[in-house]
Amino acid sequence: GVYPVGAVLTSVDPDTDGADDGQGEPPLSVTVALDVSIEHVPFAELRIHKADVKLEDGPRDRFTVHGRYRVGGTSDGVDPANETVTVSFDTFSQRVPGRRFSPTGGDVRFTDKGPGIKKLKLGTDGRFQVDARDLALESVDLSRPVRFTLQIGDDRGETEISFDRNGPCGPHPGSRRCAP
Image (tube, rainbow, N blue to C red; front, side, top):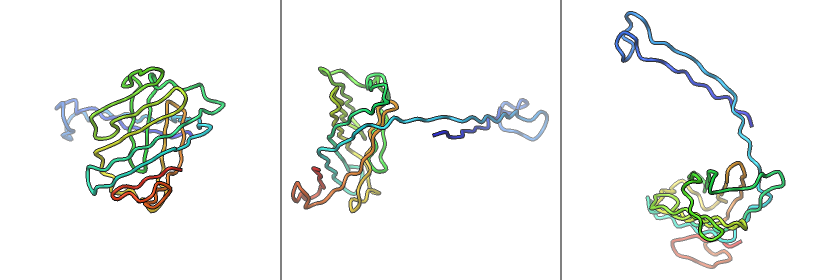
């Protein structure tokens, strides 16, 4: 959609080169307002094959998500090596600039020490893997579905992941897994 963005820019006091001292010439101000258009092209499909979250009550929380996306008909295609990739899991969100990806075969991969995303792999066939660690996910409520978003450039998909200790993967002490 279209979002109004505004800024007020104020110079330093010309008399003091610092804050306004209320004497002599006052600082100059200018107000700038513009409308910014942000358009997302929805994925035709975003499917989660496997997800796991482990909450440790502190900065050692983690999650992994494996799945597949399919671009929509109005997409100009995805090019992770040249576009920013954003991953969101409930309140966690991280952007990875395309220049941070390395080619591995036909895929691209981002690796980092964290905290945050330690590994993000994107396949040319739409498969993806996210491994994020050393997080503080205390606000994540696993009794309700967790929103997951993957965005590559202007192409974006959202889905909800439900976690159940005794779901299709069986009981897992300390973690919650989902395999829809």
